[in-house]
Image (cartoon, rainbow, N blue to C red; front, side, top):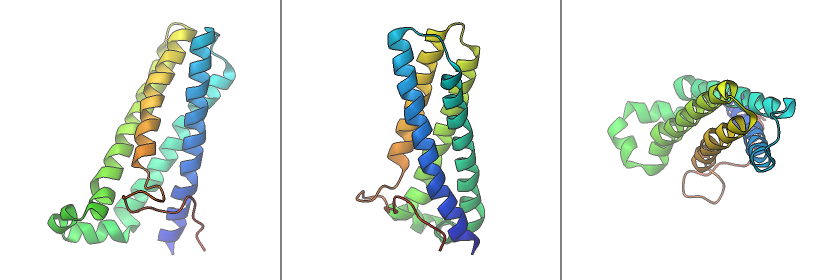
Length: 157
């Protein structure tokens, strides 16, 4: 009962992460190219990305540690799991890339906060959030890919 609910929340929250990520990167590109001031909307985008990624990681860790039958089975036969690319993706690759992206989002938010001027803020946002979003996008099991594809969204019922 809890697994489908958390899996659905994790699936839906991914879209908030992607929307905020694209928004922040677009704002950073426009801000750098026009050399405009750092605006409230820029900071709201960063805050939205920061919190949506954090919520997504918490949901993912709950799935990983407590609820996922894939992970529970894999941990009972780790050596066998590492030979199966589908299981290895969930056991190691997906989680590792997402935690790296989380770190980049945290570093990016701190760099933006500490930057001396608006152009430096936009540059930090573009670099750190751009790399984080790239890692997130390549670590999502999109339909039609080789990595155990999942639906674009899922509901708990």
